[in-house]
Length: 316
Image (cartoon, rainbow, N blue to C red; front, side, top):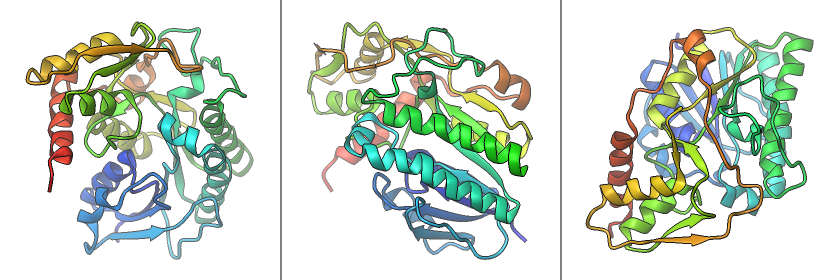
């Protein structure tokens, strides 16, 4: 019989790619999403296939899955600033109540649970690059605190269930990830820049553009998550991301270089509150534990992403 896996946030950007990967690997996949930020378009190609079931459900309520359940991937949460600033209470609830319900289900079923944390637990870091041992520099009452603290609480609760009840857990701290199925309007820098360039609008750079990010292509991230869940029993957080760091201004120039037909220019606007100045993962632990590192160069990943967004913008 196939191993059964529940994936929350299944209709989201990363969740939908995880549905694909585990289905392709022969798992019976149960996708769950309340569709507050996800889209059925991301998983509709799986509808009607054997070994895939979709449940339209809010994970902050009691979660029951009949029968055996071997694994849980808890990826339900707004993940972009546009979304979690629009839904601050829902973001806190899915990080707290949703995590509580998923951990309870994992305990009841004897399942291994992998929880999607984030590089945002490091806040605006005073350590660079960021190692898993760094405790972070977070403003708990700032506008971004609803996301940062929800994820920090998630990690704390996961470790409590592990230590108290022996639940088998994995925690992945995800750094900036990109690729097809991102929403053009999700407010993150990559869809913003590509959408603006394709529409010949000015690319909006906040501050002077010297702040840095490190972009990991989604296929690389999914491979790391797959290995962490199945090839490791390590319960503490593991960074997954691409250590290739780039300033936002240089990144805007890279996008324009890949779209020479674009008539876009670059404009500057004030830096948002609590926006991190630097972001780069130390992935030494992932290399050691999982034999993992990103394989897809940024230029190749950006070309694939541009092709996806170009198709989304073309009239039907």
